[in-house]
Image 1 (tube, rainbow, N blue to C red):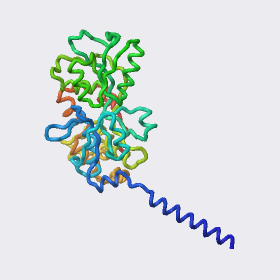
Image 2 (cartoon, rainbow, N blue to C red; image 1 turned 45 degrees about the vertical axis):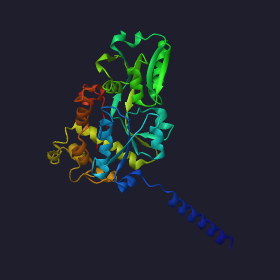
Image 3 (cartoon, rainbow, N blue to C red; image 1 turned 90 degrees about the horizontal axis):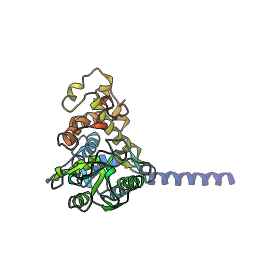
Image 4 (cartoon, one colour; image 1 turned 180 degrees about the horizontal axis):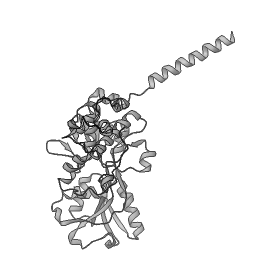
Length: 343
């Protein structure tokens, strides 16, 4: 009798555990995105070349194209994106709260962000470094020319603040931080003469310079004081979704390496090169199934968004923001842009 009672008790515990596991099972972001029909993307509050909205509310930029690529892969339509502009201070909270599902907002990959606050970086879409902008009339030609009491404008809630503190401490120069939550507030304060210099990622300086009343009156100093690998971020613990965003980024970059672009992809479907066949999702390839996507996931990205080079050209080179790709050239062309193979 005791054995029977014990078996009944164990069975009851099994049922409770099984039911509990079923009720607490989370719906993946991938499933939710397919059901809702759009990608929830967090972007900047306006950074030309990276994520910026025009007067009609149309978003463009190299960070925006990451989200468009994900939408093309998951939904077959790169336009199916809902953009949420976020300040540097708001961005991680919005991602953790589920207000967005991808953060593609010139965000630096660091140990603390990756390991300590429940985020997962899935790659790098822009290699950058922090610099300083000054007025041409200041006579400052190098960071070595900064004097004690230098007033520095920057954004709060960023690695920029930390790098700035490290730099001035190492240089033995005192400084006065003038910080704002919104990027436009920083630009306005610097442009109005409230600071001696403005510091952020060099790409940001180049982009924000276009917003100033007299852009030609300002120069970016030659020194780079930090490493800033910028890339898309998702919530930790959602592996299927992380894989989709990661490989949407990877195929976007690898397509350039193999010369596959939005104009020639249809002809590339007949390529005899196995690597190109995998990139374009030619008949017989099965990469889509591994991501719980259809076979056209990568074709849709390249056809609708283009490859990385196309995105860089229209958003950064043709606009004059950053004509020289520098480290963001492919590894085969003197840069450090390198991704795992799509296979």
